[in-house]
Picture 1 (cartoon, one colour):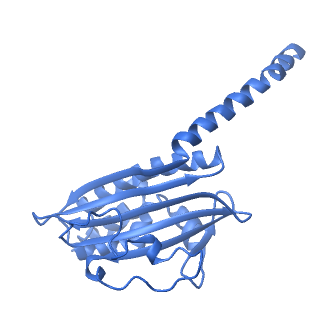
Picture 2 (cartoon, helix red, strand yellow):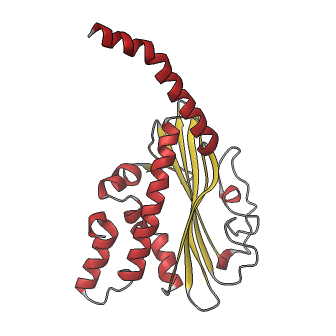
Picture 3 (cartoon, one colour):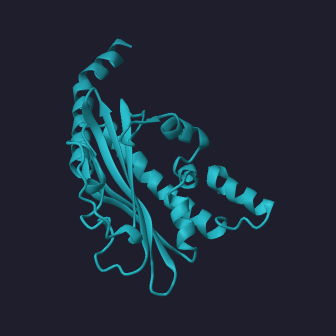
Amino acid sequence: LRKTDSKISNRLPIYIGSLALACGLGQLYYGDEKDFYDYRFICDKDPDDLADFYGSENFMDIYCVLPFMGTLMMRGGYFDEDGVVHTTGLPGEMLVSMVFSDSEEEDDETDEDEPEGSVGRNDMVGSNGRPPILPSNTTGRWFNKRERFHDVFLGYTMWDMVTNFGFETLPDGRTMVYHHGEYFRGNIPPVSLLVRLVFGVHARWVAWATEHHINHYAFQNDTDFDEQLEHESRGTSIFL
């Protein structure tokens, strides 16, 4: 046993150095990343229904994967006077802010005064109201939900992530739905690298689950059975 303990003690600096090197390389490649995911699918649903879906708790049911996560992450938090959700972070506190924009309000004024240091509408959309993910020559109808997850511990940013969810109508009358990771910035490897990995896998799952829900069960509440299927496909991952 003493020989074994001695070998472990001798190799401990190697293990620590290897872990530090792995964290350093991971931080270099994944610690500050733009466009870290982009998933899209085509559907033939009514744009009004899609906008209502992404703007309500229906999409949140899928995004949180399991019902208790919705309670823990969002419904267990509170809104401050600026509309920012304060909830449990990893570590510390997570601040969640959202901006909704669409083609109908593209020409509205967006140069309103905002408190210094806040993340308001002008930081989250372009100067003409169009989100950065959409090309300037988009002529169809579009909708975007831009969401920021900002994790703070002891006054310092642990990690920061912005995602976009929305759609644009195509010339053939169908609609292209997109889920886009605009950026991820982590400052405390390996924790932030783990968060990046989890959200990367989570984004792929959410994109698939949302496509499956929209193309097979959503907006078909003709009977009580249809409504039950729609609810279960949205709120129970095992159902999918």
